[in-house]
Image 1 (cartoon, rainbow over the protein chains, first blue to last red):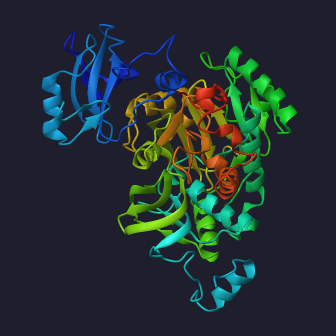
Image 2: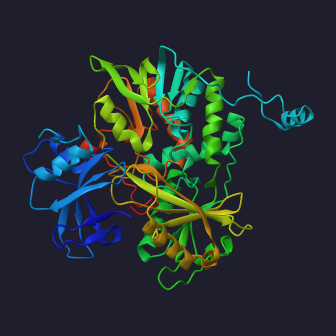
Image 3: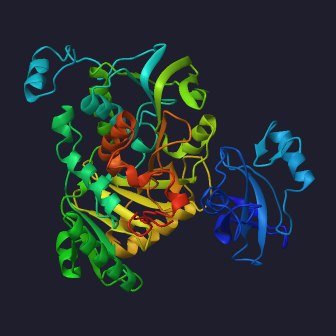
Length: 112
Length: 415
């Protein structure tokens, strides 16, 4: 069972205590965007076999949204961090680089 | 050439100690180039190759498989065959598929054990009753034979069911008399044997590591067994569609999640229909060996792990026990997962791609097994002629254009 640590209340929460919320750090497109941007925003999601960033909610706990970095191939969890950010924290990116050299996900990668 | 399988052949071989049986398909090494390369030797990939040869005479075809033939979702599903979908394009392709299953054993000279034992989808809430009545009416217009049946008829067809559960009472069911099951491995093996007999190469343990293109047109693939050239490329890899699409340089509106199933110890025959209970996220049939084959829910998050999550089993079994109290005494024997490729509208994608000459068949999600013959039939036409009446509605650009084929109700499993 997947276990994620809620960055707010510090509880190591089991999957049944959490609600998955899909891809993290989405850029929202609305009025004024073109068809391709809107299509991409609505339907195209990152689907990597490897490092992935997601949103989760501690639904049966403190109720707050947070982010998690996870490997979709091994279910290894690299870490979690609060929702009030548009990119993964530098320390977490370094931790992922140590375990998955050469990783990249959307505009984020080992170098950036 | 290969043996023709028949009662006479069995008798003949019995008289000579079974020394005359041959390999069902040749062990092949890749040639330098092919007219068409299909990536993925699962049911859909092999069916595509088979109908390319049978309908269009294209036999210079290779089917590449990174693992073993039929070892992905083809060997991991719960073998249910039905065509009681809501939308017209779905009814067309799924009913084509179901009707092909009726004669598939004869067509392939390989017993796929198609068993049209009947499929019932239980309505356990008022919303489901209305939803399934609507589907039954839609099916009537589409020429797909289904009917909405009463709880009394449900009990007659499936005596082990409990109609008056406190949480999940059975209020009726959508019944498709000619739905049923087939032997999943045999479907892959039968197509593989027929493809091999037409001179096609089925190359296992040959992973595609890259897609070669020139001027926006596909010219071949790099594999763990070297580079292979091709005029046309068909990507039919289910859960790994996103990974392959990335190699080919385009994206897909697909997310991959694990869907799981389990089987019980074998018992005497207790149930000769397939029962799906979508409200409780479970579906069940009894295999010819006597095992109760139980399908569960999908994970809510992306993963490629091909294994199940225990809490889904708990949810599924808890709910099924309420509907089938006799299950509570059974031990479960095996439990596994497969990676399903989910689209936003729960309908598949059979389409051209931004890469000229490259075609994709994916997005069958939780219900691809039933569609194998129809999918191959349409996909072969798409590759050979550039379009097919069976697949046109399932193109990749339907998301941009808002032409969804919404089957989130009919797809039949909790999402």
